[in-house]
Image 1 (cartoon, rainbow, N blue to C red):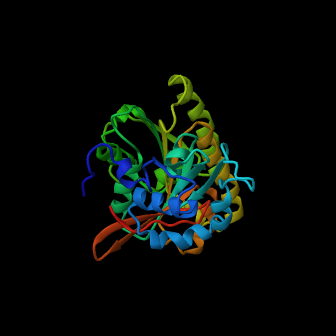
Image 2 (cartoon, one colour):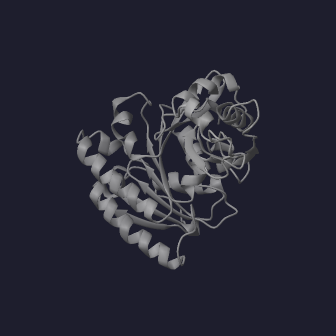
Image 3 (cartoon, rainbow, N blue to C red):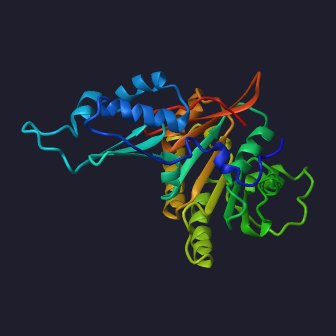
Amino acid sequence: MLLNGTDTEADVAPESSSQTFQYTSQSDQPLSREVVMSVSRASDIDPIELHQGLHEVINPTALNALFQPTVDGTPRQEGTVEFLFHGYRVSAAADGTIALRSEFNRLKQTGMNLLVCGTVPDRIRDVMSACLLGDATRERAVLFVLTDRPTQTALDRLVDSQIPEQQAHVFSTDDSVRSAVTRPSPPETDAMLSTVTGSLDGIHTALLRTLDELEQSHDGFAPAELRVCFDSLRPYIDMNNLERVTTVLEKICDVIVQHDGMGQFLLPYAFVSPEIQSVRSCFDFVLELRISQHGPEYRWHFNITGFTTQWLPL
């Protein structure tokens, strides 16, 4: 299975575009309808499907009245309202502007974390993970944490995403190293290889130290320059101490956000499983994978708003 060129992240990002539309507050069309039509044009979704969803995030009647003239007929010259709708941060202003900004793109500028789930073959997850490593035309700092996958997993994803091995640091937990004694040794690589304690606390400590060192060597990270891939969370979820796992997982996610990074955490369970539902609150998005009659597909779940995209081909 091949990736679609080097700029792969744009192919999988939810509602990746940001657009601006103009409306006239004195027109016959209420602002709520203008918002629905703007999002429809940006996302290529039937406005009928969007209309009911708007009621779930904002009061359309109040929105329509927001920029209407005052009781004495004086036009409203100032004011802006913002809300999340269908994967966009919508900003409507009194000057007649509706701006749509992808929530995914916005969070990439400030740091974000996502959970990749689904009961699919490892190769499907590997392809999606490589896509999420980003555009190879930009210099990246890539850090892998491998708990139940061999080192070759990380090296193969670097090849798929066309990211040089010199830009990668691979952590393997001591448990995963011991379980791999019967596997072939990994080939020679220019990636930095390290072994860390198998506990989540140990991984958290190692990430704190290593990311601080990487940030200094990079003279600071640009937004989304740092990519962290954690594959997988399954050994910790299976230990059944979910409260402890969630506590430490939140700390690990915070470290990634503090460095303006993008973290992907893989957990090979179905989206509706109790394992996924128990930890999904730690993440900004959940990316769900499946294999249908059309082949491998994925969709995004936005945790803040509860919005879910349509199924898309991988």
